[in-house]
Length: 307
Image 1 (cartoon, rainbow, N blue to C red):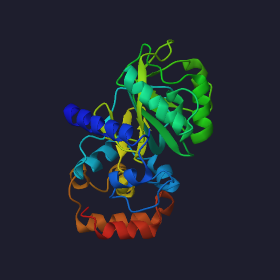
Image 2: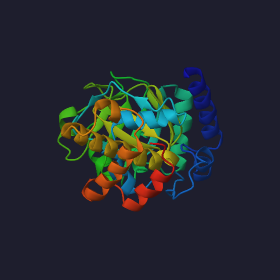
Image 3: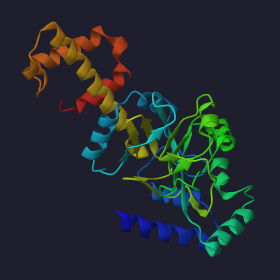
């Protein structure tokens, strides 16, 4: 996986430099995400709905992870984070950035291209300028902590002002106390250090990146909780949410019936009989307040469900 990611990164970096750009074009992002058939942002990224992102917050990491694995996506989770506010979940759309160890000749080219694109300030602020409401700034800074702090509280405030979200960095931040004071801002990071960024350069914005064990594309839906982060391909978000919500309903029904003593654990924790299925449907009718989706959505979903 490391070799494949490195080769892909080399190819994309060469493409960006030859094309005299610091980010993929909307056409390139569309070509990178052809399975997404819905709305897109102006920059070409898939634009999943706010409603689904809100519902995604209630999905457990294990459920999202398991559903993706069943669909063949085996490398979409990364754990072992330092989380600014562990009890707050975060969902959003991925804006990606790739950082690399400093190489003066390449860094010079990138800064020249940024200037030609009218980008302002240091390159580590450029990804912030493209953020929109609901975006999460996700960066691969190759795990560098000392002299690898991508943001402090000034940039943290700018990020939250633009996105109303936070960051996920395979790297570090500084000014932790200041970041904690930004109401609503959250961060998943690999470390904290009081140093400032040195000997690093921006490789590209909205390009495929590696975050630990996961591959992340611009526009991916993101589910971040204290246990880790799942990166969901945009075209699979609705399936993930509906499947997870159905599993939660099944569990709620099963737990209630077990407490009532109506069924045994062996009956609930296996393929349900027709009798239990009918009981479940009656339970749904009697508990409409428990449905996170519309009943129409649920009925359509259950037509193809094997239980």
